[in-house]
Image (cartoon, rainbow, N blue to C red; front, top):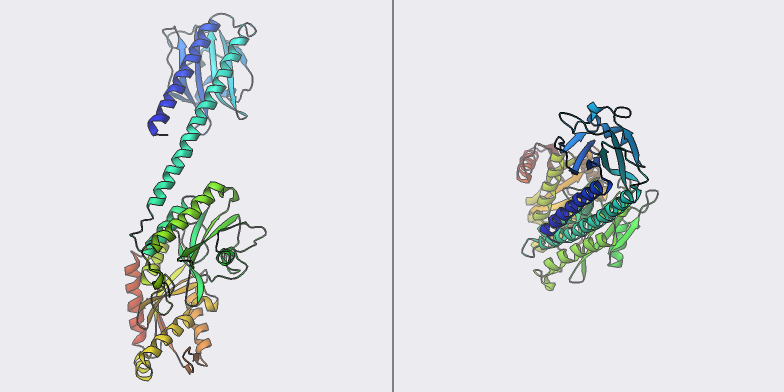
Length: 487
């Protein structure tokens, strides 16, 4: 239904009410009849229409409850009769000017869903006999109920149609010409529109594990970036089955991703991303209100995931699917991914909904020694081993490793612990102290230098954050003693 159709329905609704109020006035032979809506949100009476032959009557569009005599009758559930001068003073009848003809008033409440939503008032110089006009009042109220129900049904139909029109626009934003990371980011953004009290996050494989790598900018109370997927979670079950899984959470169970996440409430809907029949990711949609996940909502979410997957599949050859979709080299996530993820976290911080997040660069301290000792093919395998060994989630720290350049890797760590980066470096150092096992056989003594910065709402963009981390890494590389420098 178009907006014009909705406006036409509203005009017709108003015209019918005007006609009904006029018919009530003429059939009951009173001098004045009027109807107003009871707007409780704004605490106002809002005038809809009136019918009279009197020359000295004028109504304001809306009047505050406390400024009108109807205030004490706004919750009326039965017809009320008043005598002017006894039950209500002439001074309170502010719609008259010069003089007040009315001597009797009849207030007819209109009840909808157990609440008084409108008042129709009859005013007359003569007595108003309720018994005599009972049929007219009942017919009026019945007609009002019918016309209101019809109008609300029309509006509801329009809103339902509008909802699907907005959804079609969401689907169209998943343009196959975008980069695959942009498609996933758009997908999360559009899913977020369906989740008013929750959010959407994306997990992907890399670093020899599955981790949270993207969170929708508008997501509420989202699980931390870098959390590592565990069995006995909703996301794991969806990946294992290869189809969407919906679950409600009771007593903090089951977990969405891992036992390390915050309290799990409401409901979750996990959708695997299949590209050329290979599981390349899983989306977890969650909301504190399980009623959010109507069948239509679940259809929208799973279809957005399917369209995103097909959009990417159309530009990725099956033969090119040897490696994970979002890793660049050596199992580290591609720059396009960690840059978008970083921008999203910056946006969340600037809105006041972010989490403590650190970005940095890490590199082995003796690259020239490695290049001298190993062949090129072996060096590539060693870099893969480095990325796996650096993976923060292996040490219980939420985070992931990205590719920056040969032997220089980026990282994002997100934690409530202010010492998360130091803790990660210490645990990694302790783990590698006895040597790092290589996939090509043998072990090496690997030491790493780390330059990092904490992102804040003052950070301009991902580029500025990266430059601060680069300066910090350059500083630590030139210091033989230091292992860790914050910029």
